[in-house]
Length: 375
Image 1 (cartoon, one colour):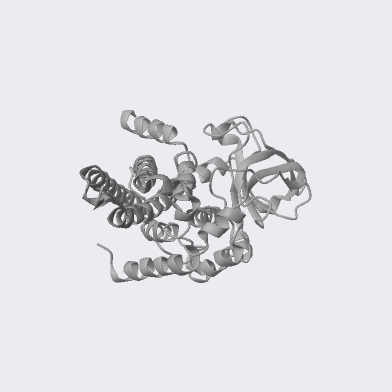
Image 2: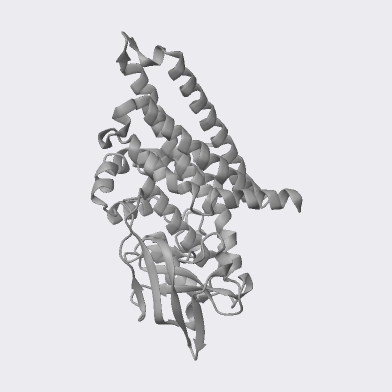
């Protein structure tokens, strides 16, 4: 059961999604428009620093409340809500592990979204094997000189702040450090915007370091701590993207129910046919199971329980797989109309597909779960 504050938070996010996201999501997808002004409107509601400390403008909410917010927002626009999860994760790293000076300088700009943040971990040659990254930072006096590139970076070329994991030491996880890199830093450039299956309302490109000089004062934590920060951020990131899957699938399901009631074939609404009824029953059951697993994992993470990484991986795997299938079944119920952009179900299916890949593929989630079981 939600308490009074949580119901109010959920209602506020649902209202914003209905009024400011859903009416425009089809246009943003078609025009590949990144709705920065809308993101900043979200920030005014506290959604750009959901679980950041209140000292510098964060909302100080829990991971469970973040899941409620992202579930609600994604019902309006999956891609835009998903970008906000990335901004929150990058901002959380600065707020959680940065020095007092770094936090005072950057966090107020991030929670207001005066500055937009991207998170840079994946590289062209290191996806699931994140510890194999090859981008390097060499110390040169009061600067580090960075060379290498990051791949599949949401917001690349538009974001103002890049929270990047770069190798400063030996091969392996312990040689990775974390840096705050500002957009106008000499030696920082960006690849062409990638042509993607979905997530069209946010740009995705490579982030390229060519003798990119970053002040030592922009390193977060000590040398060698970056990979630890990245992994700590991923538990929450996985729940955030699961929440986006859940909210999108719920919208697809709701539309399928209404369509089934309205669509007539053979002299009856298709909702009267047992084949459709069984589909809807299974979809409703999967959504309920996904919601329970997500909420339980978020509460486990908030409690700091030892099972938090395992449960986050379980939730990410189950929720993103199940919700993609729910949306795909919603498309099937719509028949040929589901394949048309005007009905928007096809966009939901396209947007949800990548959730089974990012924040750790669902195959890697199984690796994490199995390791925890057998340790």
